[in-house]
Amino acid sequence: MLMLQKKWTLKAADAELVNSLQQSLKIHPSLCRMLVQRGIDTFEKSKQFFRTSAEHLHDPFLMKDMHKAVERIHKAISQGEKVLIYGDYDVDGTTSVAVVYRFFKDLHPNLEFYIPHRFTEGYGVSKQGIDYAREAGFSLIITLDCGIKSTVLIAEAASYGIDVIVCDHHMPDDILPGAYAILNPKQPDCNYPYKELCGCGVGYKLISAYAKQYDIATDRVNQFLDLVATAIAADIVPITGENRTLCVLGLKKANEDPSIPLKALKQISNLDKAFTITDLVFIIAPRVNAAGRMDDARKAVELFLAEDDEAAKSLAEQLQENNNDRRDIDKSTTVEALEQIQEIYSDTALRSTVVYHPEWHKGVVGIVASRLIEHHYRPTIVLTLSNGKVTGSARSIKGFNLFEGLNHCAEYLDAYGGHYFAAGLTMSEEKLPAFRKRFDEVVKSMVAEELFQPEIEIDAEIDLSTITEAYLNVLRQFAPHGPDNMRPIFLTRNVRDYKGMSQIVKEKHIRFVVDQENGPSIQGIGFNMADKLNSVVKAKPTFDILYHIEENVWNGQTRIQMKVVDVM
Image (tube, rainbow, N blue to C red; front, side, top):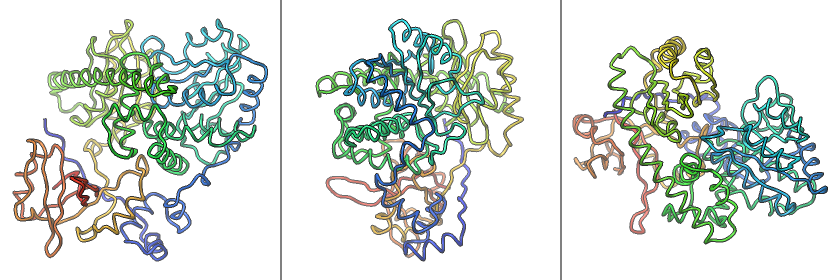
Protein backbone atom coordinates (compact mmCIF):
# COMPACT_ATOMS: atom_id res chain seq x y z
CA MET A 1 0.00 0.00 0.00
CA LEU A 2 1.45 3.39 -0.99
CA MET A 3 2.01 6.00 1.68
CA LEU A 4 0.30 9.38 1.42
CA GLN A 5 2.12 12.28 -0.23
CA LYS A 6 3.36 14.49 2.56
CA LYS A 7 3.25 18.28 2.74
CA TRP A 8 6.65 19.99 3.09
CA THR A 9 6.89 22.92 5.50
CA LEU A 10 10.03 24.95 6.13
CA LYS A 11 10.24 25.89 9.82
CA ALA A 12 10.43 29.59 10.60
CA ALA A 13 13.33 31.28 12.39
CA ASP A 14 13.80 34.93 13.39
CA ALA A 15 16.26 36.33 10.81
CA GLU A 16 17.73 38.94 13.20
CA LEU A 17 18.41 36.34 15.89
CA VAL A 18 19.95 34.00 13.32
CA ASN A 19 22.23 36.78 12.03
CA SER A 20 23.23 37.87 15.55
CA LEU A 21 24.05 34.28 16.54
CA GLN A 22 26.05 33.75 13.37
CA GLN A 23 28.13 36.85 14.16
CA SER A 24 29.06 35.46 17.59
CA LEU A 25 29.46 31.74 16.76
CA LYS A 26 31.04 32.06 13.28
CA ILE A 27 29.37 28.88 12.01
CA HIS A 28 27.21 28.29 8.93
CA PRO A 29 23.96 30.34 8.99
CA SER A 30 21.82 27.20 8.54
CA LEU A 31 23.26 25.80 11.79
CA CYS A 32 22.41 29.07 13.56
CA ARG A 33 18.91 28.89 12.08
CA MET A 34 18.43 25.44 13.61
CA LEU A 35 19.70 26.64 17.00
CA VAL A 36 17.25 29.57 17.00
CA GLN A 37 14.40 27.19 16.11
CA ARG A 38 15.31 25.25 19.28
CA GLY A 39 15.29 28.36 21.48
CA ILE A 40 19.12 28.55 21.52
CA ASP A 41 19.40 32.20 20.50
CA THR A 42 22.37 33.61 22.46
CA PHE A 43 26.06 32.82 22.77
CA GLU A 44 25.59 31.70 26.41
CA LYS A 45 22.70 29.36 25.57
CA SER A 46 24.76 27.94 22.70
CA LYS A 47 27.72 27.35 25.00
CA GLN A 48 25.50 25.41 27.41
CA PHE A 49 23.91 23.47 24.52
CA PHE A 50 27.25 22.42 23.02
CA ARG A 51 29.18 22.01 26.30
CA THR A 52 26.70 20.00 28.39
CA SER A 53 27.89 18.99 31.87
CA ALA A 54 26.58 17.84 35.26
CA GLU A 55 26.89 21.46 36.44
CA HIS A 56 23.73 22.19 34.44
CA LEU A 57 21.59 19.89 36.63
CA HIS A 58 19.24 21.69 39.01
CA ASP A 59 19.25 21.40 42.79
CA PRO A 60 16.68 18.64 43.54
CA PHE A 61 15.47 20.54 46.60
CA LEU A 62 13.96 23.18 44.31
CA MET A 63 11.16 20.66 43.71
CA LYS A 64 8.09 21.15 45.87
CA ASP A 65 7.79 18.62 48.75
CA MET A 66 11.32 17.26 48.23
CA HIS A 67 12.37 18.01 51.83
CA LYS A 68 9.22 16.29 53.11
CA ALA A 69 9.80 13.24 50.93
CA VAL A 70 13.46 12.85 51.92
CA GLU A 71 12.72 13.23 55.63
CA ARG A 72 9.85 10.71 55.47
CA ILE A 73 12.05 8.13 53.73
CA HIS A 74 14.83 8.71 56.25
CA LYS A 75 12.37 8.16 59.09
CA ALA A 76 11.22 4.89 57.48
CA ILE A 77 14.81 3.71 57.15
CA SER A 78 15.70 4.76 60.72
CA GLN A 79 12.68 2.98 62.21
CA GLY A 80 12.86 -0.15 60.04
CA GLU A 81 9.50 0.40 58.35
CA LYS A 82 8.41 -1.71 55.38
CA VAL A 83 8.65 0.38 52.20
CA LEU A 84 7.04 -0.51 48.85
CA ILE A 85 8.43 0.96 45.60
CA TYR A 86 5.47 1.01 43.18
CA GLY A 87 5.83 1.67 39.45
CA ASP A 88 4.23 1.30 36.04
CA TYR A 89 4.82 -1.51 33.51
CA ASP A 90 6.49 0.49 30.71
CA VAL A 91 10.16 1.45 30.30
CA ASP A 92 9.82 4.66 32.31
CA GLY A 93 8.03 2.86 35.15
CA THR A 94 10.32 -0.18 35.31
CA THR A 95 13.55 1.84 35.14
CA SER A 96 12.19 4.22 37.80
CA VAL A 97 11.49 1.34 40.16
CA ALA A 98 14.89 -0.24 39.51
CA VAL A 99 16.80 3.01 40.11
CA VAL A 100 15.03 3.96 43.34
CA TYR A 101 14.89 0.38 44.64
CA ARG A 102 18.58 -0.28 44.00
CA PHE A 103 19.63 2.99 45.64
CA PHE A 104 17.63 2.49 48.83
CA LYS A 105 18.16 -1.29 49.03
CA ASP A 106 21.78 -0.62 50.00
CA LEU A 107 20.53 1.51 52.90
CA HIS A 108 17.42 -0.39 53.93
CA PRO A 109 16.77 -4.15 53.58
CA ASN A 110 13.04 -3.87 54.40
CA LEU A 111 12.14 -2.91 50.85
CA GLU A 112 10.06 -4.47 48.05
CA PHE A 113 8.88 -3.39 44.62
CA TYR A 114 5.48 -3.79 42.96
CA ILE A 115 4.55 -3.56 39.27
CA PRO A 116 0.82 -3.86 38.38
CA HIS A 117 -0.06 -6.44 35.74
CA ARG A 118 -1.11 -4.74 32.50
CA PHE A 119 -4.07 -7.03 31.84
CA THR A 120 -5.47 -7.73 35.32
CA GLU A 121 -4.75 -4.39 37.03
CA GLY A 122 -4.22 -1.82 34.30
CA TYR A 123 -2.22 1.39 34.37
CA GLY A 124 -1.11 3.15 37.55
CA VAL A 125 -1.94 2.59 41.20
CA SER A 126 -4.34 -0.35 41.50
CA LYS A 127 -6.76 -1.61 44.16
CA GLN A 128 -4.81 -4.88 44.22
CA GLY A 129 -1.58 -2.98 44.85
CA ILE A 130 -3.03 -1.06 47.81
CA ASP A 131 -4.56 -4.24 49.22
CA TYR A 132 -1.21 -6.00 48.93
CA ALA A 133 0.54 -3.14 50.78
CA ARG A 134 -2.04 -3.26 53.59
CA GLU A 135 -1.96 -7.06 53.96
CA ALA A 136 1.84 -7.20 53.92
CA GLY A 137 2.23 -4.46 56.51
CA PHE A 138 3.83 -1.68 54.47
CA SER A 139 3.66 1.78 56.06
CA LEU A 140 5.19 3.76 53.17
CA ILE A 141 4.60 3.52 49.40
CA ILE A 142 6.71 5.45 46.90
CA THR A 143 4.94 5.61 43.53
CA LEU A 144 7.00 6.21 40.39
CA ASP A 145 5.66 7.31 36.99
CA CYS A 146 2.11 7.11 38.36
CA GLY A 147 -0.07 8.23 41.27
CA ILE A 148 -0.84 11.86 40.43
CA LYS A 149 -4.41 10.92 39.41
CA SER A 150 -4.94 8.19 42.04
CA THR A 151 -6.85 10.36 44.49
CA VAL A 152 -9.32 7.70 45.67
CA LEU A 153 -6.79 4.88 46.08
CA ILE A 154 -4.25 7.08 47.88
CA ALA A 155 -7.01 8.15 50.27
CA GLU A 156 -7.76 4.47 50.82
CA ALA A 157 -4.09 3.82 51.59
CA ALA A 158 -4.11 6.69 54.10
CA SER A 159 -7.15 5.16 55.81
CA TYR A 160 -5.01 2.06 56.42
CA GLY A 161 -2.24 4.17 57.93
CA ILE A 162 -0.03 3.98 54.83
CA ASP A 163 1.80 7.15 53.77
CA VAL A 164 2.30 7.65 50.03
CA ILE A 165 5.01 9.66 48.31
CA VAL A 166 3.97 10.32 44.70
CA CYS A 167 6.77 10.73 42.12
CA ASP A 168 5.11 11.47 38.80
CA HIS A 169 5.46 13.65 35.72
CA HIS A 170 1.96 13.44 34.23
CA MET A 171 -0.33 16.46 34.22
CA PRO A 172 -2.24 16.71 37.53
CA ASP A 173 -5.99 17.14 37.81
CA ASP A 174 -7.46 20.15 39.59
CA ILE A 175 -7.70 18.10 42.79
CA LEU A 176 -4.40 16.56 43.88
CA PRO A 177 -4.26 13.28 45.83
CA GLY A 178 -3.88 13.56 49.58
CA ALA A 179 -0.40 12.04 49.55
CA TYR A 180 2.22 12.62 52.25
CA ALA A 181 4.38 14.31 49.59
CA ILE A 182 4.03 14.90 45.85
CA LEU A 183 7.07 15.24 43.61
CA ASN A 184 5.86 16.46 40.23
CA PRO A 185 7.29 19.57 38.54
CA LYS A 186 3.94 20.10 36.77
CA GLN A 187 1.94 20.50 40.00
CA PRO A 188 0.80 24.03 40.95
CA ASP A 189 3.24 26.09 43.05
CA CYS A 190 6.22 23.89 42.18
CA ASN A 191 9.13 26.19 41.40
CA TYR A 192 11.34 23.50 39.89
CA PRO A 193 12.92 25.18 36.82
CA TYR A 194 12.45 22.26 34.40
CA LYS A 195 8.97 20.83 33.94
CA GLU A 196 9.53 18.02 31.39
CA LEU A 197 11.26 15.30 33.43
CA CYS A 198 10.08 11.72 32.85
CA GLY A 199 9.09 9.49 35.79
CA CYS A 200 12.59 8.04 36.09
CA GLY A 201 13.95 11.58 36.02
CA VAL A 202 11.81 12.47 39.06
CA GLY A 203 13.03 9.28 40.78
CA TYR A 204 16.62 10.28 39.99
CA LYS A 205 16.04 13.71 41.57
CA LEU A 206 14.65 11.98 44.69
CA ILE A 207 17.74 9.82 45.21
CA SER A 208 19.96 12.81 44.34
CA ALA A 209 18.26 14.82 47.09
CA TYR A 210 18.59 11.99 49.61
CA ALA A 211 22.29 11.57 48.77
CA LYS A 212 22.86 15.30 49.10
CA GLN A 213 21.04 15.52 52.43
CA TYR A 214 22.80 12.54 53.99
CA ASP A 215 26.24 12.94 52.42
CA ILE A 216 26.15 9.86 50.18
CA ALA A 217 28.72 9.79 47.34
CA THR A 218 27.38 11.09 44.00
CA ASP A 219 28.79 7.96 42.32
CA ARG A 220 26.07 5.97 44.11
CA VAL A 221 23.47 8.11 42.34
CA ASN A 222 25.17 8.50 38.97
CA GLN A 223 25.64 4.75 38.47
CA PHE A 224 22.03 4.79 37.24
CA LEU A 225 22.40 7.50 34.58
CA ASP A 226 22.31 4.99 31.70
CA LEU A 227 18.89 3.78 32.89
CA VAL A 228 17.68 7.39 33.27
CA ALA A 229 18.70 8.11 29.66
CA THR A 230 16.89 4.94 28.54
CA ALA A 231 13.70 6.14 30.25
CA ILE A 232 13.93 9.65 28.77
CA ALA A 233 14.42 8.20 25.28
CA ALA A 234 11.62 5.64 25.59
CA ASP A 235 9.03 7.98 27.13
CA ILE A 236 9.30 10.48 24.23
CA VAL A 237 9.69 13.52 26.51
CA PRO A 238 11.43 16.66 25.18
CA ILE A 239 15.21 16.35 24.79
CA THR A 240 15.76 19.88 26.07
CA GLY A 241 17.22 21.45 29.21
CA GLU A 242 17.80 19.01 32.02
CA ASN A 243 16.54 16.01 30.03
CA ARG A 244 19.19 16.70 27.40
CA THR A 245 21.87 16.99 30.09
CA LEU A 246 20.77 13.68 31.64
CA CYS A 247 20.78 12.03 28.20
CA VAL A 248 24.30 13.25 27.41
CA LEU A 249 25.59 12.01 30.78
CA GLY A 250 23.58 8.78 30.52
CA LEU A 251 24.86 7.96 27.02
CA LYS A 252 28.42 8.59 28.21
CA LYS A 253 27.81 6.08 31.03
CA ALA A 254 26.13 3.59 28.66
CA ASN A 255 29.07 3.69 26.25
CA GLU A 256 32.00 3.94 28.69
CA ASP A 257 30.78 1.98 31.72
CA PRO A 258 27.41 0.36 30.99
CA SER A 259 25.41 -1.31 33.73
CA ILE A 260 25.12 -5.10 33.65
CA PRO A 261 21.48 -5.06 32.40
CA LEU A 262 22.21 -2.61 29.58
CA LYS A 263 25.21 -4.71 28.48
CA ALA A 264 22.95 -7.79 28.37
CA LEU A 265 20.31 -5.98 26.31
CA LYS A 266 22.97 -4.68 23.94
CA GLN A 267 24.39 -8.17 23.47
CA ILE A 268 20.99 -9.80 22.90
CA SER A 269 20.15 -7.08 20.33
CA ASN A 270 23.40 -7.71 18.38
CA LEU A 271 24.28 -4.02 18.65
CA ASP A 272 28.00 -3.65 17.99
CA LYS A 273 28.47 0.11 18.10
CA ALA A 274 28.18 2.95 20.59
CA PHE A 275 24.65 3.60 21.89
CA THR A 276 22.67 6.53 20.50
CA ILE A 277 19.29 7.77 21.68
CA THR A 278 17.82 6.14 18.56
CA ASP A 279 19.18 2.76 19.72
CA LEU A 280 17.59 3.22 23.14
CA VAL A 281 14.22 4.09 21.53
CA PHE A 282 14.08 1.46 18.79
CA ILE A 283 16.27 -1.40 20.07
CA ILE A 284 16.32 -1.36 23.88
CA ALA A 285 12.88 0.09 24.72
CA PRO A 286 10.79 -2.42 22.66
CA ARG A 287 12.47 -5.35 24.39
CA VAL A 288 11.82 -3.87 27.84
CA ASN A 289 8.23 -2.93 26.98
CA ALA A 290 7.60 -6.40 25.56
CA ALA A 291 7.70 -7.88 29.07
CA GLY A 292 4.61 -5.93 30.10
CA ARG A 293 2.90 -6.23 26.71
CA MET A 294 3.18 -9.99 26.44
CA ASP A 295 3.70 -11.27 29.99
CA ASP A 296 4.69 -9.64 33.31
CA ALA A 297 6.77 -6.45 33.57
CA ARG A 298 8.36 -7.64 36.83
CA LYS A 299 10.86 -9.44 34.57
CA ALA A 300 12.05 -6.08 33.24
CA VAL A 301 12.68 -4.78 36.77
CA GLU A 302 14.44 -8.03 37.71
CA LEU A 303 16.72 -7.54 34.71
CA PHE A 304 17.50 -3.96 35.78
CA LEU A 305 18.32 -5.26 39.26
CA ALA A 306 20.55 -8.12 38.04
CA GLU A 307 24.02 -8.03 39.58
CA ASP A 308 25.81 -10.66 37.50
CA ASP A 309 26.17 -11.24 33.77
CA GLU A 310 24.58 -14.71 33.70
CA ALA A 311 21.38 -13.63 35.48
CA ALA A 312 21.13 -10.55 33.25
CA LYS A 313 21.68 -12.61 30.09
CA SER A 314 18.95 -15.10 31.06
CA LEU A 315 16.42 -12.33 31.74
CA ALA A 316 17.40 -10.43 28.59
CA GLU A 317 16.77 -13.61 26.56
CA GLN A 318 13.29 -13.88 28.06
CA LEU A 319 12.58 -10.27 27.06
CA GLN A 320 13.89 -11.03 23.58
CA GLU A 321 11.42 -13.94 23.28
CA ASN A 322 8.59 -11.68 24.45
CA ASN A 323 9.63 -9.11 21.85
CA ASN A 324 9.73 -11.68 19.05
CA ASP A 325 6.22 -12.78 20.00
CA ARG A 326 5.11 -9.15 20.14
CA ARG A 327 6.52 -8.44 16.68
CA ASP A 328 4.74 -11.43 15.11
CA ILE A 329 1.41 -10.52 16.69
CA ASP A 330 1.84 -6.83 15.93
CA LYS A 331 2.52 -7.60 12.24
CA SER A 332 -0.43 -9.96 11.78
CA THR A 333 -2.78 -7.61 13.66
CA THR A 334 -1.73 -4.68 11.48
CA VAL A 335 -2.51 -6.70 8.32
CA GLU A 336 -5.95 -7.67 9.69
CA ALA A 337 -6.69 -4.08 10.75
CA LEU A 338 -5.74 -2.71 7.30
CA GLU A 339 -8.08 -5.26 5.68
CA GLN A 340 -10.84 -4.20 8.05
CA ILE A 341 -10.28 -0.55 7.15
CA GLN A 342 -10.70 -1.33 3.46
CA GLU A 343 -13.95 -3.17 4.17
CA ILE A 344 -15.49 -0.68 6.61
CA TYR A 345 -13.99 2.62 5.51
CA SER A 346 -14.80 2.78 1.83
CA ASP A 347 -16.60 6.01 2.82
CA THR A 348 -13.83 8.55 2.18
CA ALA A 349 -15.78 11.25 4.06
CA LEU A 350 -14.85 9.59 7.38
CA ARG A 351 -12.07 11.41 9.22
CA SER A 352 -11.27 8.85 11.93
CA THR A 353 -10.41 5.16 12.13
CA VAL A 354 -11.98 2.88 14.76
CA VAL A 355 -11.28 -0.83 14.24
CA TYR A 356 -12.23 -3.73 16.50
CA HIS A 357 -11.67 -7.45 16.77
CA PRO A 358 -12.46 -9.35 19.98
CA GLU A 359 -9.40 -11.61 19.66
CA TRP A 360 -6.67 -9.04 19.02
CA HIS A 361 -3.92 -9.03 21.66
CA LYS A 362 -4.35 -6.18 24.12
CA GLY A 363 -0.59 -5.71 24.41
CA VAL A 364 -0.10 -4.57 20.79
CA VAL A 365 -3.14 -2.39 20.04
CA GLY A 366 -1.25 0.85 20.70
CA ILE A 367 1.59 -0.12 18.36
CA VAL A 368 -0.91 -1.15 15.68
CA ALA A 369 -2.76 2.18 15.99
CA SER A 370 0.53 4.00 15.29
CA ARG A 371 1.19 1.78 12.26
CA LEU A 372 -2.27 2.41 10.82
CA ILE A 373 -1.72 6.17 10.90
CA GLU A 374 1.25 5.66 8.54
CA HIS A 375 -1.25 4.34 5.96
CA HIS A 376 -4.44 6.25 6.89
CA TYR A 377 -3.48 9.58 8.36
CA ARG A 378 -6.29 10.30 10.80
CA PRO A 379 -6.99 9.82 14.55
CA THR A 380 -7.03 6.07 15.08
CA ILE A 381 -8.42 3.72 17.73
CA VAL A 382 -7.70 -0.03 17.83
CA LEU A 383 -9.96 -2.08 20.12
CA THR A 384 -10.16 -5.63 21.43
CA LEU A 385 -12.21 -7.53 24.02
CA SER A 386 -10.81 -7.96 27.52
CA ASN A 387 -12.65 -9.08 30.66
CA GLY A 388 -16.00 -8.65 28.90
CA LYS A 389 -15.31 -5.04 27.85
CA VAL A 390 -14.19 -3.43 24.61
CA THR A 391 -10.84 -1.85 25.42
CA GLY A 392 -7.94 -0.45 23.46
CA SER A 393 -5.58 2.35 22.55
CA ALA A 394 -5.86 5.52 20.51
CA ARG A 395 -3.22 7.52 18.63
CA SER A 396 -3.63 10.96 17.12
CA ILE A 397 -2.33 13.33 14.44
CA LYS A 398 -1.11 16.90 14.64
CA GLY A 399 -4.07 19.19 15.26
CA PHE A 400 -6.28 16.82 17.27
CA ASN A 401 -6.10 16.62 21.05
CA LEU A 402 -7.11 13.03 21.65
CA PHE A 403 -7.87 13.37 25.36
CA GLU A 404 -10.07 16.40 24.70
CA GLY A 405 -11.79 14.54 21.85
CA LEU A 406 -12.58 11.57 24.09
CA ASN A 407 -14.03 14.00 26.64
CA HIS A 408 -16.71 14.78 24.04
CA CYS A 409 -17.49 11.06 23.77
CA ALA A 410 -17.53 10.38 27.53
CA GLU A 411 -21.21 9.29 27.56
CA TYR A 412 -20.26 6.14 25.62
CA LEU A 413 -17.16 5.26 27.68
CA ASP A 414 -16.71 3.43 30.97
CA ALA A 415 -13.20 4.82 31.40
CA TYR A 416 -10.54 6.69 29.44
CA GLY A 417 -7.29 8.53 30.03
CA GLY A 418 -4.25 9.83 28.23
CA HIS A 419 -2.95 13.00 26.61
CA TYR A 420 -2.73 14.84 23.27
CA PHE A 421 -1.32 12.07 21.05
CA ALA A 422 -2.08 8.83 22.93
CA ALA A 423 -4.91 7.49 25.10
CA GLY A 424 -6.60 4.36 26.38
CA LEU A 425 -10.32 3.68 26.65
CA THR A 426 -12.91 1.08 27.74
CA MET A 427 -16.59 0.70 26.85
CA SER A 428 -19.44 -1.82 26.62
CA GLU A 429 -19.58 -3.66 23.31
CA GLU A 430 -23.12 -2.50 22.51
CA LYS A 431 -21.98 1.15 22.64
CA LEU A 432 -19.28 0.71 19.99
CA PRO A 433 -21.37 1.68 16.89
CA ALA A 434 -22.67 4.87 18.54
CA PHE A 435 -19.18 5.71 19.82
CA ARG A 436 -17.65 5.21 16.37
CA LYS A 437 -20.17 7.62 14.85
CA ARG A 438 -19.77 10.21 17.59
CA PHE A 439 -15.97 10.05 17.55
CA ASP A 440 -15.90 10.78 13.81
CA GLU A 441 -18.22 13.77 14.33
CA VAL A 442 -15.91 15.11 17.03
CA VAL A 443 -12.82 14.71 14.85
CA LYS A 444 -14.52 16.54 11.96
CA SER A 445 -15.56 19.39 14.25
CA MET A 446 -12.09 19.82 15.79
CA VAL A 447 -9.66 19.28 12.89
CA ALA A 448 -9.28 21.59 9.89
CA GLU A 449 -9.41 19.76 6.56
CA GLU A 450 -5.84 20.68 5.56
CA LEU A 451 -4.47 18.92 8.65
CA PHE A 452 -5.41 15.51 7.26
CA GLN A 453 -2.38 15.65 4.99
CA PRO A 454 0.76 14.47 6.83
CA GLU A 455 3.50 17.06 7.11
CA ILE A 456 7.29 16.99 7.09
CA GLU A 457 8.84 19.93 8.89
CA ILE A 458 12.13 21.05 7.35
CA ASP A 459 14.87 22.61 9.48
CA ALA A 460 16.98 24.25 6.78
CA GLU A 461 17.50 24.60 3.03
CA ILE A 462 21.12 24.09 1.90
CA ASP A 463 23.15 23.30 -1.20
CA LEU A 464 25.00 19.98 -1.39
CA SER A 465 28.31 21.90 -1.34
CA THR A 466 27.47 22.92 2.27
CA ILE A 467 27.88 19.33 3.46
CA THR A 468 31.51 19.14 4.57
CA GLU A 469 33.34 17.41 7.41
CA ALA A 470 33.50 20.75 9.28
CA TYR A 471 29.74 21.21 8.90
CA LEU A 472 29.08 17.66 10.08
CA ASN A 473 31.36 18.18 13.09
CA VAL A 474 29.04 20.92 14.40
CA LEU A 475 25.90 19.01 13.39
CA ARG A 476 27.01 15.98 15.47
CA GLN A 477 26.91 18.18 18.56
CA PHE A 478 23.14 18.78 18.15
CA ALA A 479 22.64 15.21 19.39
CA PRO A 480 21.11 13.56 21.34
CA HIS A 481 17.89 13.97 19.38
CA GLY A 482 14.25 13.66 20.41
CA PRO A 483 11.11 15.80 20.80
CA ASP A 484 11.90 19.56 20.54
CA ASN A 485 15.37 18.64 19.29
CA MET A 486 14.60 16.25 16.45
CA ARG A 487 17.24 15.10 14.03
CA PRO A 488 17.45 17.93 11.47
CA ILE A 489 15.80 17.50 8.07
CA PHE A 490 17.44 19.35 5.18
CA LEU A 491 16.01 20.46 1.85
CA THR A 492 18.10 20.73 -1.29
CA ARG A 493 16.41 21.89 -4.50
CA ASN A 494 17.22 21.02 -8.11
CA VAL A 495 19.37 17.94 -7.62
CA ARG A 496 20.06 15.53 -10.48
CA ASP A 497 20.39 11.77 -10.75
CA TYR A 498 24.19 11.81 -11.08
CA LYS A 499 25.14 9.98 -14.33
CA GLY A 500 21.94 7.92 -13.96
CA MET A 501 23.52 6.00 -11.08
CA SER A 502 20.55 5.99 -8.65
CA GLN A 503 19.06 2.50 -8.49
CA ILE A 504 16.71 0.19 -6.59
CA VAL A 505 18.35 -2.08 -4.01
CA LYS A 506 16.76 -5.08 -2.30
CA GLU A 507 13.52 -4.46 -4.26
CA LYS A 508 12.15 -1.79 -1.87
CA HIS A 509 14.86 0.84 -1.38
CA ILE A 510 16.72 3.40 -3.52
CA ARG A 511 20.48 3.98 -3.45
CA PHE A 512 20.73 7.62 -4.48
CA VAL A 513 23.67 9.25 -6.21
CA VAL A 514 22.85 12.93 -6.79
CA ASP A 515 24.54 16.24 -7.53
CA GLN A 516 23.75 19.86 -8.34
CA GLU A 517 25.06 21.80 -11.31
CA ASN A 518 28.77 22.57 -10.83
CA GLY A 519 28.76 20.87 -7.42
CA PRO A 520 29.93 17.65 -5.78
CA SER A 521 27.98 14.40 -5.91
CA ILE A 522 26.81 12.61 -2.78
CA GLN A 523 25.34 9.18 -2.09
CA GLY A 524 22.27 8.40 -0.01
CA ILE A 525 19.76 5.70 0.91
CA GLY A 526 15.98 6.00 0.77
CA PHE A 527 14.20 3.17 2.54
CA ASN A 528 10.88 1.88 1.11
CA MET A 529 11.01 4.47 -1.67
CA ALA A 530 11.34 2.22 -4.73
CA ASP A 531 8.14 3.65 -6.26
CA LYS A 532 9.81 7.09 -6.43
CA LEU A 533 12.65 5.97 -8.73
CA ASN A 534 10.72 6.03 -12.01
CA SER A 535 8.02 8.51 -10.98
CA VAL A 536 10.42 11.22 -9.74
CA VAL A 537 14.18 10.48 -9.86
CA LYS A 538 14.34 9.17 -13.45
CA ALA A 539 11.33 11.11 -14.72
CA LYS A 540 12.55 14.66 -14.03
CA PRO A 541 15.67 16.52 -15.12
CA THR A 542 15.94 17.89 -11.56
CA PHE A 543 14.00 17.24 -8.36
CA ASP A 544 13.92 18.39 -4.71
CA ILE A 545 15.11 16.14 -1.92
CA LEU A 546 14.63 15.96 1.87
CA TYR A 547 17.19 14.13 3.98
CA HIS A 548 19.16 13.70 7.18
CA ILE A 549 22.95 13.98 7.03
CA GLU A 550 24.71 10.97 8.50
CA GLU A 551 27.93 8.97 8.48
CA ASN A 552 28.10 5.54 6.87
CA VAL A 553 30.80 3.17 8.09
CA TRP A 554 31.61 0.30 5.71
CA ASN A 555 34.71 -1.91 5.64
CA GLY A 556 36.50 0.50 7.95
CA GLN A 557 35.75 3.47 5.67
CA THR A 558 33.61 6.37 6.89
CA ARG A 559 31.80 8.64 4.43
CA ILE A 560 29.11 11.29 4.65
CA GLN A 561 25.79 10.26 3.13
CA MET A 562 22.17 11.30 3.02
CA LYS A 563 19.36 9.34 4.63
CA VAL A 564 16.58 10.40 2.27
CA VAL A 565 13.19 11.24 3.77
CA ASP A 566 11.22 12.26 0.65
CA VAL A 567 11.63 13.48 -2.93
CA MET A 568 9.38 15.63 -5.09
